[in-house]
Each structure stands twice: as C-alpha cells, then as structure tokens.
Amino acid sequence: MKIAIIGAGKWGQALYHAYSQNNKVVINSRSQKNIENFVSLDEALSCDYLVMALPAQVVRGWMSENFEDRGQKILVAAKGIETSTGAFLNEVYGEFVSLDRLAFISGPSFATEVQKSLPTALKISSLNLNLAQIYADALPDFIKGYVDDDVVGAEVSGAYKNVIAIASGVCDGLELGNNARAALISRGLVEMTRFGEYFGARRDTFLSLGGAGDLFLTASSQLSRNYRVGLGLAHGKSIDEILEELGEVAEGIPTTKALYRIAHKEDIYLPIADEVYKMLEGKDPLVCVKDLLSS
Image (cartoon, rainbow, N blue to C red; front, side):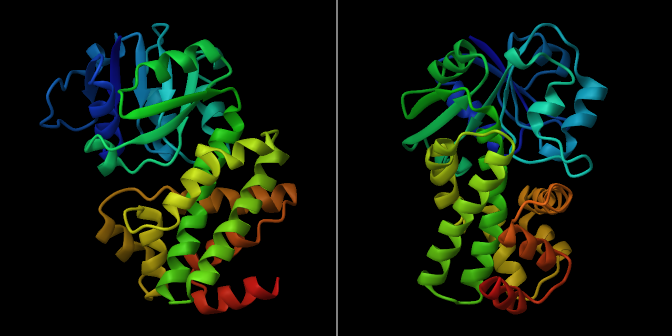
C-alpha cells in the first residue's frame, strides 16, 4: 500500500513510523518537517489511502481549503468533537467524502511508545468493514488490529476519555488518593457510555480497547496531555499557562466545551464533564470535587 499521513504532530509521526514498517508511506504537514519522505500536499493527496492526523478543531477548515477528492480512503486519527457545531468527526468528514470511505482508529496508544515499536492493540472502526480490515492489516507486527463498524462508539469513547483524563489529573494533583481516582474513572466510563448510547453507539464498544482500554491509559499517566492539563488545574495554573507548558494540543479542552453544550441542549446527565467545564471556566477544583460528590 501507498499511504500518506497528513499531519506531523507526535501522533502523526507515530503512525508514520508504524505504517512505514510494511508499506510505502509519505507524510505532509502545514509546516516543513525534517522527516524522511516528507512530500508536498499534492503528492500526499495522490495516494489512495490517507491517514488524517489533524487536530479535531481544524479539520473542517483544512478540508475546505486543501482537500481534493480523488477517491481516497481516509483513516481518521484525531479524537474530538467540533466545538463550534457539536458535530462528530464522521459528520465533518462526511461533508467531503462518503461514509464508506472513512475509518477511525482508536485504542490505548501513547505516541512515544508506538514510536519505540512497543506492543500495542488498536481498533479500526468503519461502516465499511473491508476498508477497516485493509487499514488493520497494514499495521506492523507490534500492533494488533481489531475491526468493527461502531463508528459513533469509537468517536465518542476516543473524545470523551480525554475529558475524564483531565478530571483524573485534577484528582491526583489534589492528592485525593487511589480510591478517588478509581471511582472517578469507573464513573467516567458509565458517563461516556450513557452519552454514546444516546447517539446510537453500542454499549459493548465502551468495554473495548477504544473505550475502557483508552480511558484507563489516558486517565492514569503523565504521558497523557489531558491528564497533565488536570494536574495543572489542580495546582492553580491558568489554561494559557498549561497549554504553553504542554506546547501541543490537548483535545480534552475543546471537547469538554462541546460536551457541555450538547448535554444542556439534549438534557443528558454528564456530571463529570459538567464539572470539568466549570474548572476550565475558573471554578475552584476543590469546590468542583465537593459538588461532584454531592451530585
């Protein structure tokens, strides 16, 4: 296969490393990178298979300004919900290509460990199971790929776990203990399942790699950007300070805002996401914990 990675952040470069093991892979990003096989956008878009590793909030603008439909199949590697509209990424990409040409990757996977070729398991979700299997089969030996057709479940779990990771970072930053973190993560799993089922996702998806697997990883390690956002909030830092220290996108922040708006519009009970939103808006984390315990 000839595959083009669009987006050369940490996750894009990790997927470039992974897919390069058994395939011819090129990579492109808005700014020039000193990466082998870095090519022009036109050459990247000429590939039959694309892996889109763009942050969720820039997808619509990038596709409107840059994408040329040449019949390409797309694997979406971002995880998030569009803040301005509340749209899932399958809906955003679906405005530019048919849904049978879209697949979504999820599962517990820190980019740094993928770059080191450490054992990993991922899930590829698509309404077109043949396409999902093509992307899964192209993965290297150190990554076990599974496939399913629950696109909404993959999207919701991949986006929501970042919000719970922020809450978990707050929990640890406040030194509330292992009991509190375990309770938070398990209730977070219930909350994201509730949200996903409302939009038609299957319950068992949230007990899979892309659900519980990715949640447990992201909400319990300082390798997680969103977990570090929570640590920063617990230590009294502003969002601007936290993002400057991170030096990269933390998708949980815009996703939290999107969830807050969707929950209030659709009347969905999301107590953890609600309190994370209020923390991002300046509410004292200790007060948030107290209110969450009494809700």
